[in-house]
Length: 218
Image (cartoon, rainbow, N blue to C red; front, side, top):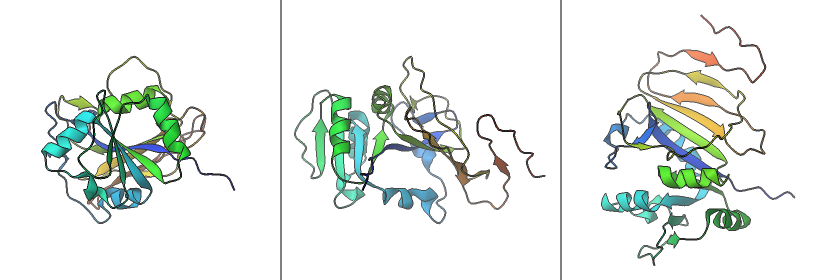
């Protein structure tokens, strides 16, 4: 039996102009109506048992009263810091080892997939080490102008493997969910869809590379 490779997945929401928070960490703009299914969050959460945090993102959560234990019994939390310390919270471990070594060690252990919580700095560091397998990005239909970017700015060129899996449903009060497989060796697909709360929508299908674009329905 082939052992399933644990994926490290960035599952995150951004503004329409690519920010995950304002410069001070404020995310009030994320408050949106929550339709049945909560944009697939419950379904995704059942696929993971580990969460990766950058120190600043974890610290901001603690300031706002977050407890990592609140994500569920048995969820392991790893916080990346240049100066790791002993955690006072059960289920939380501070990590200072090189990303490549950590990712290989974590993947070698049995378990479900791994949620890369962010922020932009730790996402960038894992991406540059080729240790991000998939992006699931919920795009909130609002421009916030400036703030913390999804991926910290560095010079890079990371190809994304894309082919169609489904349709895009465009709704005014929803999120766009875009999956991107960034693992260079994998020939997987991209699905794009919006989960929303409006019945007024349009559908578009995106062709695979080299295929002729189909005429959208009128």
